[in-house]
Image (cartoon, rainbow, N blue to C red; front, top):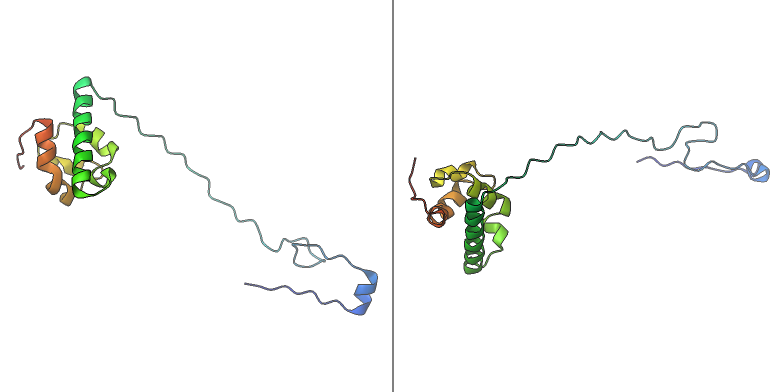
Length: 130
């Protein structure tokens, strides 16, 4: 931090010299705080939405119902079980094993182990390890 103080003497007070506000001194036109160039925002294209078939839509709805029931049972918010985006990906992809769930955004090893068999049961697929 820097502090800038102006001291007036009697001669300056009598002349009533105006001090420019926001400047280093009356003799320079340099601003006290320079404007920092902000980096340009790089716009990322939005990912294309996944379009589900009628069968995949049914799977998605079944997964949402399971998630809401499981969240109520565990005393958690539904998003803590799985986000809608994750459920859409599960419904759209051919998930055959809990290990396949690791390819889904938001599913790590713990979540895949904890919920993988239940998810495969809902989808009507047998749980098989790779």
